[in-house]
Each structure stands twice: as structure tokens, then as C-alpha cells.
Image: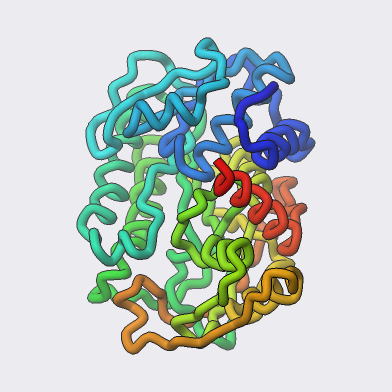
Length: 356
């Protein structure tokens, strides 16, 4: 079933639908609300659910919560209106929807580091007020399950001696740093979710995502993986504003989606699960060099232009963040796409976007 003009993303949607890791039968005849449904992950989730509904004849209906109706109609232009219902509105306002909902995937969030620094109040209130509205809606609908899309940033800056970060390992977050609007917001929302789970018996869990990317990333995206890919495409140097020593894991879009669906359907109430490819741990500097070596025809070189105050540009303090994924893997999930394939598919997708 064709759902997008981006053939790389279409392949990913079909890969998700064909995945034996997802308990698709649990979604038969269900109504699923996806917030942030035109974002990278929310959009892929919505498209994969629609595709699965058709290919597996599930009778599943997706309710896509979006702010911009025109953008949503363009993104979902191939979706059958019987399978997709748009819910238009700002997530910081109460959710207005009379239909029954069985499951919620809550992904509406600020995503740009630059935005966190320039609009910290909006970043916090989108997290807190937006999630309160979704939780109140979940309570009123007595949903079967909900997953909140959280982030590795809840861990803060952990001690460099810690080799693997599981769901109980936390470091420090400076509350007086404006950049902390995102990470502190995510922490508080996780507590809000588990509080609703405890007080009202709601089946809510959190998926802690590492940096996830793939087909569908906008060409002008400001995140580091997109900047690097754009440099390769345009034959420009990769310029680092830090020493590039931060290490973290990454996850391909299709793996992130199967992980989120696994947590939604199999995760334990009030628990958090790391979603990452444990084999992709790499520093920013080495990731840049990997791309330079993989695409020598681009002529791209690595250049350091260290910023005096990197935090004002939205950069986090140096971290070494190797996420432990055993908890999610115990549910039957695993990441399948390696880092080189991630970038290969990202670059092909971004080239498609640039050619339109």
C-alpha cells in the first residue's frame, strides 16, 4: 500500500509492518491515538499502523493528533480516510475527541535544541501541560494502554566511569541551565505518567529513546546526524563546535517504531524502557569520520571551530551515554539496523527531499 512519495520511508513502513517483533493481533479492531503525528517518529508510527491495518486486515483506526491541518493532510495524502482520523488542535489544550480510544502513543514534544534554548518556557509547558491533557483524556477513555515517548536526556550527565546506563542509572541535570528545559521536562513528565498509573490504575509506560533517525528527516533538520548527512550530500566540510567527544547510541526509525509498539503492548505499567541500538555507541567526532571515510567522493573534511559557549547554541554538556537495552529486549524486541545502513538510508532519503 503506497503511503508516501519517499520510497525509502515506504520501504521502512513495509519493514515495520512485516516485523514479527510486534504483536499486531493485539491491535485488531482497536483505535489508536498518536500525538505529534506529523513528527518524524509519530509520522512513521501512524503510517505503519495504517499499513498494518490494510495488509493484515486488522480493522485498526489511527487518530492522528496534529497542530497543522494543512501539513497533516499533505503528509497523509495517500491514507484512507476510513483508517485515519485527524484530531486538529494544540496539545496544550484539552483533547477534544468523542470517539473511544484503546491505545495512546504520546509523542508531541519540542525536538530542536535551538528551540529549547530560545523557547524554554514553551518547551516545558508543552511537556507538562500537554501530557496532563493527554493523561486526563486517557483516564476519561479508560484506555487499555499508553506509552510516553521520553528521551535518554532524562539521565543527565552520568559519571564517565559508568559503562552502561540502565533504567535506574541517573546523573545530574543543572536546573539553572536553560537547556535543561527539555531534559527536566521529560523527567517531570515521566513522574507524572507513573503517578497517573499508580493513582488511577492507568496502564502507562515510557519508552526512553536515544537519538533516532531515518527516512523522512527534513533536509534542513538541525540535529547533528542531519547536519553531517547534509555536508556529505553538498560536499561541504563537517564543522564541529565542540571537541566531539560525547558518546551515545543511535537507533534507526523502523527499530524505534517496533520498540515503541513493543513497549506499548508488552511493557509493564509504570515502567520505563531504553530503546537504542546497543551496537552503535560512537563519539560525535568518530561518527563524522565514519561518514567522511564512507563517502570519500564528497571531499568532506572534519574541521573544528570550538564555540566559546556551546550551551547557548543548544549543545549539551559532554556525556558518555551507552544505553542498556536488556529490559526492552526481554519483551522480545531488538534493534536490527546498523549505523552505516542508518546513514545510507538517511542520505538517500534526504537527497530525495532535496530534489523536490
